[in-house]
Image 1 (tube, rainbow, N blue to C red):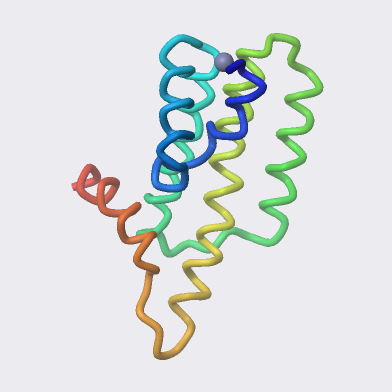
Image 2: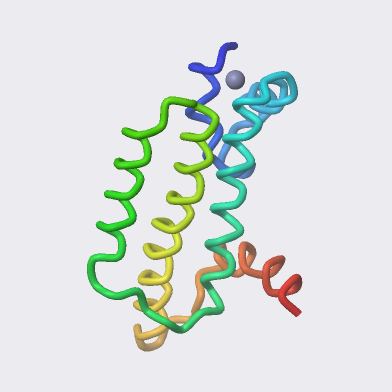
Length: 132
Ligand SMILES: [Zn+2]
């Protein structure tokens, strides 16, 4: 399995992969620094999402669009794939954070529904524990 084959698996959380997919990803990441860095960047995205569960501030209109435009500009400027990966990881974390913040806010506003969703509770717990 090469990088091209494993790349679609890098963003997934372990529970989203089949046992075979998880093993393929783990074996490749153990031997490929480039994919290991990308997998780590996605891990940071998940941590950022977890932290958002505890925040109240709502991003202003256009935040998502500006973050995506910044990603495009950085990708166009960067020739070093390692640097491009770092940039994409941090910008991706911001974009995902904005999206989840909106989703959580809408969920909080919805009457008669517990919040946040169970999957997000599981995500948020480690970040909240670390924050204390
Ligand atoms: Zn690789």
